[in-house]
Length: 331
Image (cartoon, rainbow, N blue to C red; front, side, top):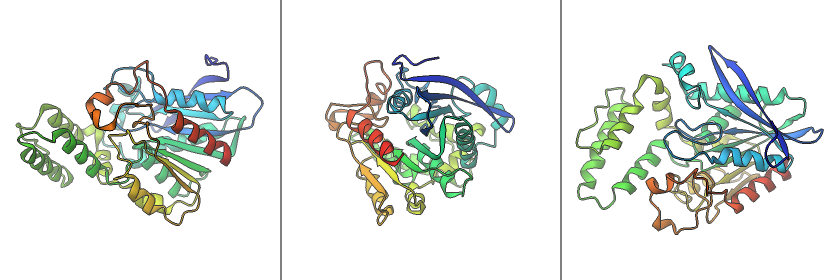
């Protein structure tokens, strides 16, 4: 069907991966092509191809909005539901128990690249990855494993620059800040994570807040393993150090899940000497590249996340313009 802005045509695609099916959306700009193209890789958890999540209200996902903007700039795209997300998760998850891993995410991404390259209107030598948050690991891992169809460049939005477990703990510490038992809660959390990483039952202390207990227990559910343990110690900085293609890293200053300084600085050190690595820290972009005009200190994580995909949100103009300009320049 044609997009509402009449700059592109969207179509649904699928591809088989083992005994499961991956579902995605192709967006083709109008015109003969061939077009440069982008594979979009969503962030963590059950985030779908549009960058919506069933854990959060709203369906105005940044992924869809970015795909539409790419089309207006003459760039094709493919965005897809990870097999543990989207409307078909129940069909896939039983077949994936014990098989969800870093490698399974790379396999999904490889299928997306093959599907995109198979389109006659796409330039196979100008395929880029555009990732959000956790998606950076999958694009970097894909690129570093000598793929048959390597990326021409990477756009990494909100990538963690510290090991994921450290980022997660910093988020918890921020939420617990000022609580009378803050130190005790963090110690109990740390003990549970230590058991998890050692392969023992996580057994969260019942005095931990219910939401924290649920998060901890979700890590060891069979459907999340072995991926959850791999992800917890994953570190994007050493991976970024190894890539030799153009890279654009964007972390918004209003992102309170990934910190533009605490995460941006390790990534900048990792990219030192890489002449084609560009860093941008937009003043008003949040974790999903939506515009956030309130002062950072006035926004708490739970409150901000509730508005990530609400109907009245829009992409941050500075972040979006920078992505489009960078892709056009490298296409």
